[in-house]
Amino acid sequence: MENIRQAIERVKARTKQQSPLSPEISRQQMGLGLGQTYGSNAATKDFELDLAYLQSQRIVSYDGRDPRSRPFDILRTEVLREMDLNGWKILAITSPTPGCGKTLTAINLAVSMGRQPERQVLLVDADLRKPNVAASLGLKCREGLLGVIEERIEMETAIMRVRAGNSKLEILPTAPTFDASDLVDSSAMTRVLRQAAEYRQSGVIVVDLPPLLTSHDVIAILPQVDCVLLVGAIGLSKVADIEECEKHLQATHLVRFVLNKVPVSKDNYAYY
Image (tube, rainbow, N blue to C red):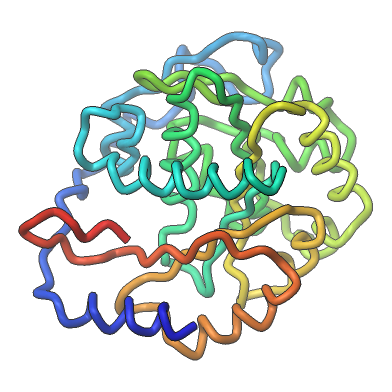
């Protein structure tokens, strides 16, 4: 905990600069690659994502030559090393409160993992209240995870294989629902996560969860995951919030704490 406080204080002392990843979004770019809607019968195809749209959403880790992908590549190496050493498979990503960039971190990390040819990566959007994985990738989702939980569609139909530059991975997004609390704290969610683990026995599953302190959704899912990555943000995450998260995560393996929205330093060594 002291290391987290020190990291926050060091970053606060830096001169604030605007992040270079802030292009405007064209609404015409919204929609699924190749004109398909998520959850169609074309689940076995590889869909090429729109790289210009990904850039507009600050998703950059599909290109290992892009210096902006380097922080995610470093994080990928550290996280996968610990997961491999412990035999962990399901990595959950959450934040203390909304606005910390957990979904952006989850997507970029999963895409970075997907650049490794030997890795099979499944990115699951388990934020049933405010899902954002599909929209961030330029996809449309009718049901996805929600449909699988409520047994309207099969896992194989809900999962889509996508490509972005040198990265290849699978996506299981979700449609939003008003009864998220009932669904995440149910045997159906446990069953679906177990199915996901069995579906990719040799792969890595990255689960984008809701913010930890806004509901009990994350607490209900934590027993089903192997480890957690916590995402905080400069100017937004308070030390008290992080300490509260630490209490909830005492029985869970916390692999890393990512400090997001860090001002860019001139020497380019301010990663997270």
